Figure 1 (cartoon, one colour):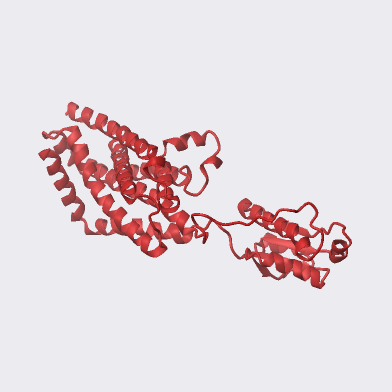
Figure 2: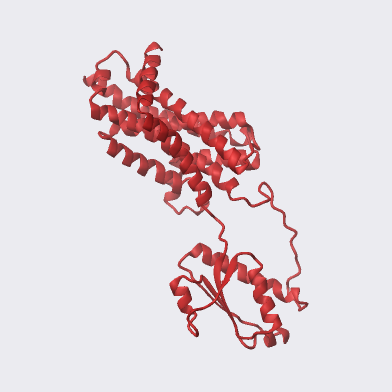
Length: 368
């Protein structure tokens, strides 16, 4: 036990010796969280819409006003005369609605009124959103002006649960915790071990009396404590800035967070055990850790939308389980009875990464 304590003291001394690294270790997670929280937007607003009303009646103007009243669009005018399609090509507008001269006549006589709608589909997410919005306006507009609504007989009374204000921060920020608290603890641990390889100080440890288990646990405990301070600071700032509130058990969340941080640090140590330089270690952690956590964890894209066979790889991404737990804690209020499997799976990842690191360092020490 004393050897582990000595190793922890050594690691803390080396970490705090470089004041700039300490500063970055605190600042970078915070900046990353703020960048994601303020920069990532899943809902589009103020989409530039070009409208051409060739009917130019009170009814046609009301229809266009209903489209704009959805608060999804901002109206722009054309700079290309009779070739408004060029506004789509240049990106000045993302959609075009052109009402024909017989729009009102057809609508009032019971015929089909067919506006021309052109949508820039280079961004398929916005394209689908625009189409859905215009379709819905066309569906409800006739009944709103006293015309027959056909088969439309149901009017839903909708309420939003868990996030009634539709605040994106309540969805994004708990997910950011999973990204930030995976990549930075693993990077710190990975760099520490690869730096010792480059400096040659690792040889002194390998020929000393410290065992592979004591060496790994000493490093792991050090960077878990540092990462937990990072987590506490980042979560406190997020609660203050974005008004997050614990809907579930804070105790269960922080216990799971500790296991998650342990798995991140042990992942970094495992990668550093195989890497022979800091640059290689950083690239490996970025590729294996950051990109998989960002793209295959459900942070931005729903897990059910991940295509096969990448959907199978997502089961091997620890951030997947912590992000689910974090969002449920801050939004839905679920706790141990519903999410008990998540920390157990994270614990399995801890054992896996520890086993990988232990096998490497045990063999290296034996050869020395």
